[in-house]
Length: 164
Image 1 (cartoon, rainbow, N blue to C red):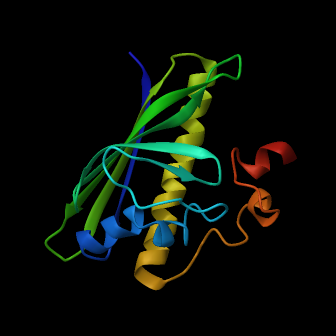
Image 2 (image 1 turned 135 degrees about the vertical axis):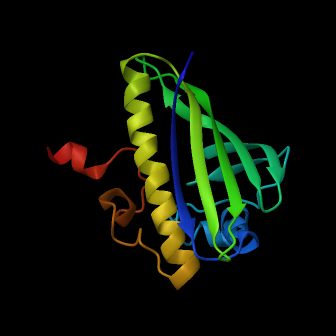
C-alpha cells in the first residue's frame, strides 16, 4: 500500500475551458507553472517539462474529463526521487461550472512519504485556488506569493518552513 491525497473544488466555468487551463501551456503558466512555465501542451504519451526542469509524463488524457500524469513527486529518506501518479478529473455540473478533483498516489509509507503527501496536498489545493482565480477572473494569485518565485526559482517546499 502507498500513501495518497485528494483535493477538489468547483470552478465556475464549463469543463472545456477549465480542462484547457491545464493542458494549454500558456494558460497553465499563467497561474501554476509561473517560473519556467510549461514546455508544451499535454498530449497522451508525451513528456512535458514544468518549472524549467520537472519532467511530467502524460499517461492518459480524455478531453474535458481526465488527465493522468506521472512525475517525480516523491523523495525518499535518502533524498532519491521516485514517481507518483497524479489524476485530475473534470466533471461538468448542471449549473455550467466544473468540479475538479485532483488526487496523487504512490508515496512510500515512511516519514519522507508522509511529508511528501502533506506538501503536495498543499501544492494541489493551491493550484485549484489559483486556477479558479485565473479561469474565472484572470488573476494570477501566485504573483508575489512565494519568496522563491520572486527570486525566479520554482517553489519546491513552502517558503515559510525556513522561517520557523
